[in-house]
Structures are given as structure tokens and as C-alpha cells.
Image 1 (tube, rainbow, N blue to C red):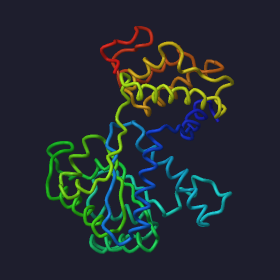
Image 2: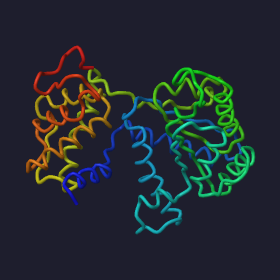
Image 3: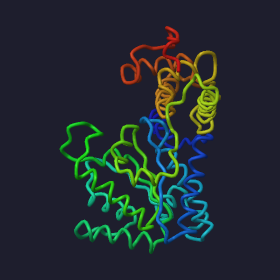
Amino acid sequence: MSIRGKIWSAFNDIRIFNDRLLDAHDIFDDLRQVTRESPQEPKRCATIFAPTHSGKSMCVKTYLETRVVDEAIKRGLFPKDMKRNEIASKQRIVIYITLEGVTTIKNLAEEILRALNVEAEGNTQQLLKLCYDHIVALGVELIIVDEVQHLRPTKQRSKYAEKNENDAGIANTLKVMLIRGVCPMVFIGVTEARTLLFGDDQLDGRVLEEISFDRLDYGVAAQREMFIEYLGMLGLKLKEHGLFEEESNLLDGDIPECLHVVSGGRVGYVSRIVEQAAVIAAKAGSPCVLRSHLEAAVDKWAIPRLIDYNPFPTGVRKAELK
């Protein structure tokens, strides 16, 4: 395997936990508890609406790989020695669907049935009935719908906020599924998607928790600490995953401030920048990622994708440090 391929593969496997992520996992657990304790009652939902690369999807992935897999093994659904990612993909305690492209009510039902490994044949109403029946029969406790910004009409005059019958139909379908007590849900998407999905007051009123995954604000002590902790853990993970001989100190000097400005406080983008820097460092034969490698990664990858200047050689423009 090439050095670059090895690094790309390793970054797919890196997992970093923080309080925000664990708090979200607790909320997912509580929603599942409602399914078990009040199976016939109307259900409600939680949401995560935040900018892209804020860690939303990774939050779900880590939840499936840890708590849900642990529960599946505890229930005897899978052997302990089975790979955790395989269990996560095969279990039906929590269903995770990612919507891509323009999705109608029928498409939504098809995606749910695909996640349930149920053949999807029939018209919209028949597919929805199949969803209801199999969710109950299989004991599904939570449905997580990611990338909900794709729940929009084909012909739209604005990117997210434009409403028409298709939007209303999808929102109404989701609302009916909750009212019928089928299953609690978690809706995940970019910030702008909230107005698309929750234009319906009744659906909006069923939100139990709006989970925050916004950009980490460097001016807020707790959020700055979370950002710095992420950098520290990421530097350790590079050695832990066998990429470098030494630990990479991503907390040295102004590195945290520079990475915050370039990433906009989004940890997903931090990982992408460090990933690029790791490739540069490895090709140079360095025992770890250094500041110079991060500077080169910003020039190579982040400009103009994320920012129009490189703070490593020029210094952080203080007005931009939030």
C-alpha cells in the first residue's frame, strides 16, 4: 500500500470522542428508551442542524459502532468476535439512512426499506405500510435520517427555503409516522435545512432536543477547550494508528489558532487539513507532523476551498479569530 493510501485509510478509522458527541449519544439512547417503554404512544424527535464538516455524521457512526453494537451483542443478536463495523451495518435496533439527490415520499420509503433489507415493491402507500409493518416487527427503536437537505422538490426556485406541495407532503409523512408511534427519529442536515423540514408547526412541536454541532467558537472558553482537546487527541491518533514514529504536537505555539481560522471551527475540516499534512510529512520522511507540514497543507488543499490566505506564515488576522 502507498503511503498516501495508508494515511487515507487510517483517517477513515480514526475516532475522537468529546462531550458534545457523548451528549448526543445520550439523547439517542433516551429516544430509544421511549420506544421500549411507550411503544404505542406518539413519538417525537431530535435534530442536528449544523454546517457541513461539523462532525454530525461521525456522531452517528460512532454511536452505531459503540453503544448500539454493545446492545446488539448484549441481546445475543451477534457474536462478540464479529467485527464491530459489520454488526453496525447489519443490526436493526437503530436504522440510519443517508438521503442523496432529490427525494420524494416514495424514495424516502424505499430508503428506509433498503436499510431494513426489505424488498421495496409497490406504490407509495404500499411502501409506507411495509415501512410501518417491518419497523414494528423488527423492533426498530430509532430512525436517523441524515442529509435531510436533499428532501426538496426537483423544481425549486431557491436552494432550501422554497416550499411547495412536495415539501409539505414529506413533512406530513414524517409527522404521521411520529404520531402513529412508529418510531422516534433524529433528523440531521445542514443549518439551512431546518426551515425546509420544519415549516410544519406540528412537526416542529415534536422536537424534543435540538442538538448543537455548530462551529466551535474560539472566543468561548468551553468550546475553545473542546477544539484544543480534539487537536491533542488527533496528534496522538496519528502515532496510535501506526502512521508516524512520534506523537504529533498539534498544540504547539499558534497551531491551534491557525487551524481554527482555516477550518472555521469545524472539526471535520481540521481532520482533512491534518490528513493532507500527514501525507506531506510522511513523504518527507518526518517522524511526525510539524507546523511546516500544516502550512504546506493549507497552501495545497485549503486555499481557496476554505480560506483566502495562509495564517501559518502571515499570522492569524485577529478579527477573524472567533
